Image 1: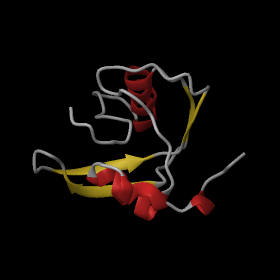
Image 2 (image 1 turned 135 degrees about the vertical axis):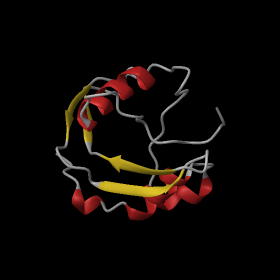
Image 3 (image 1 turned 60 degrees about the vertical axis):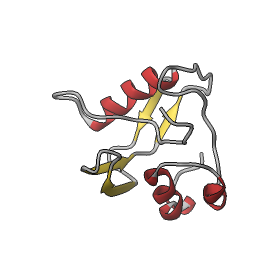
Length: 110
C-alpha cells in the first residue's frame, strides 16, 4: 500500500505449515514457484506491526524455480540488496532488521 519494501510472505491459513504458507504466498504475490523451503527458520523477527500489534516473523531460506516475476496487487517489483544498502531504501522494520541480522555464512550458495 505504500512505496516501501517488504519481505514476501503472509499469515498462515488454518492447518497450513509455514513452508506451505511461504510457497502459497510467494506464488500469489510474485508468481514464483518455490521448489524448496528449509525445515527450520533462519531468522526470527519480533516487534509491533503497523496496527501496533505484536507479531513474530519467521524467515525461511527458500529456493525458487526461476525469477520470472509477475507483478500483483501486493507486489509491484522485486529487488535484491546487500545489507549495506538497507539504509538507502524505504523499507519496513522487518526488512531492516533482517538486513542487520543477515549472515551469509549461514546459507548454502550452491
